[in-house]
Amino acid sequence: MPTQPEEGWPRLTKFVLSACAASVAELVTFPLDLTKTRLQIQGEAALREHGVPLPYRGMIRTAAGIAEEEGLLKLWQGAMPAVCRHIVYSGVRMVAYEHIRDSTLGRAEDDSFPFWKSVIGGMLAGAIGQFFASPTDLVKVQMQMEGRRRLEGKAPRVRGMYHAFVTIVAKGGVRGLWVGWVPNVQRAALVNMGDLTTYDSVKHFLLRNTRLKDNVVCHSIASGCSGVVAAILGTPADVIKTRIMNQPRDKHGRGLLYRSSTDCLIQAVRGEGFMSLYKGFMPTWMRMAPWSLVFWLTYEQIRRIIGVNSF
Image (cartoon, rainbow, N blue to C red; front, side, top):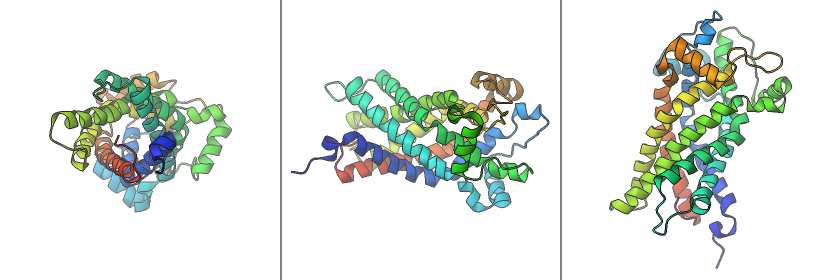
């Protein structure tokens, strides 16, 4: 009998499966991520103080404006580092969560997993995955803003993914690749508390308490719930992360607008109001919902096809 993948090299198998599913989901929904990033930057209070007013145009007009002013394919600008990020981020977080769930914290004898343990597992897995993926997230954010900078007559900061990495290291050293990692990790912990925790809890609740089977219908319901909760919990930290990563820097790599994520949070709330922390919420949710659906359906089906147990 051939060795089942999960018995031979389970973590590598699950890492690869997670990376494949995440790549598909990322490419399908990336234009919404670009729109969300642009919305989070527009109307920034710290920039208005420097005499740089930026119009806040809403989700549809922002997306249409990008396609009209910069070209349709620019809706996928920054997609390559985004896919690279998810190969690292999703691969690590999924493997970490399953390890925490099945080994570190452990399931109960009836295969149930207490909600509080799921919350801890989701937050830890998201934080670990995002810390390793933070450099690619930084590059993605900067590449996503290049089209806007060119239209404003500003000199380009980066010419591609490799050039972005080289430029960031040249200005801030290797540590510069982890600029904004604190709000990034905070966001990932909250998003995964919403995504992994909700999906895992809802899926197994349905399997234990309804007649639903471990199939596409069950996976779709669980992923729909996880997308909503992840968007609500993660958007404020995502706004802060995006602004810190996109701010101009001096020759030593220090930010010119914000001293820290706390300073960015205070400036945003004071200058724009509390709801500024939910700028880009609609495209965030509209992206997370299909992203979660595509990811979980793809992930579960690939696992089933190659003989790895259902998540």
